[in-house]
Amino acid sequence: MSAAALEVFRARARRVGEQHAAEVDALDETAGARRALSLVAEANLAKLCVPEQWGGAHLDGLASRKDVSCRALCAARYELARHSAMLDVMLVMQGLGSYAISIAGSDPLRASMLPRVARGELIAAFALTEPGAGSDLGMVATRAERVGERWKLNGAKTFISNAGVADFYTVLARTSGAPGDGGKGSLTMFCVPANTPGVSAQRFEVTSPHPIGDVLFDGAELDDGQRLGEVGSGLDTALAVLGRFRVSVAAAANGFARRALEESIAHLKSRTQFGKPLAANQGLGFDLAEMDMRLRAAELLVDEAAAAVDRGERAVLEVARAKLFATENASYVCDRAVQHFGGLGVKRGVLVERLWRDVRALRIYEGASEIQKLLMARELTR
Image (tube, rainbow, N blue to C red; front, side, top):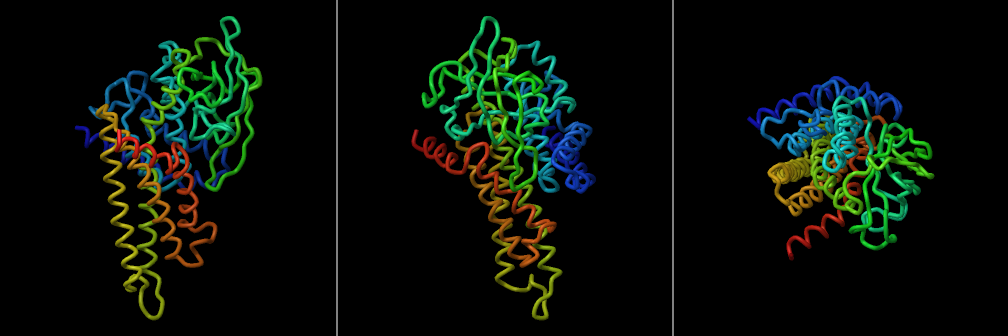
């Protein structure tokens, strides 16, 4: 039954993309983000980001009722990314921003927030990265100090997707120790409502449009009930979030690459140069063969990794391998597509140019390519 369930989620995502991508992409970042989430929620896809136990999708054996299915999320992201980066990012941010609540929040917090996340009524964001802390979370400097029964939060996060549109942030903060201590036992996760006094956001632009920016905390006061997990368990919680959602980045990369390959094939078949279609040029035909082979390999790596995660396996090697290969390959495929289009390939408004911009950040966020190589090397030699 799991295969049938996957096809249901895949088909829903495909319909949303085919029917609404142009509408979403014509809007500005804020309006586009909100419209994208409303469409994803209307199609019941936001429910893939929340365990069934707390209002999420019925997974039909893909994962337990207490967890999120990596395979289902990958299927949806693949189809959404084929059509719109904004649709894709607004889906996954519901999961990245809320999963720490799913695995570490109190039952009252889960009951009050997760069903609303699943329905798209609350917009989620995940706040890890800081000006001095990216791949090395042990360098997190944002600090939460206990004041009686409450916490006071001070610091700054950067490159936070949904900054300025999110209703809440799950935030990794330092509760002891000093930056550079590795983070084990000294960091704690919190759920921070965006309307908390002392919380503000400052947006900036990146190559692929979506709401992103800095989130600042200036004496923001939190109830202890907003703490996620035990004090000092934040690093493990953050890594668990990344471990569950990282392979879906690879799935999105494959969706972008699949669309780029489709665009290349159509263009090379229809564009005539020197009296024949470009597709009749052996060198360009070899290009398509290489693109197809690499993309199929990336898709199989994602299938393998997502299935391993859903089975509850450690899967560090499988996930790192899929994330590394798929994201690097997507840049290759989209770059070749731009080359196939010639001058049109770098013209704003041409789809392959947008895809080329959309895929670049995937090699950086949720663990840069270099971090994936490091993880793989450790696993292969442990």
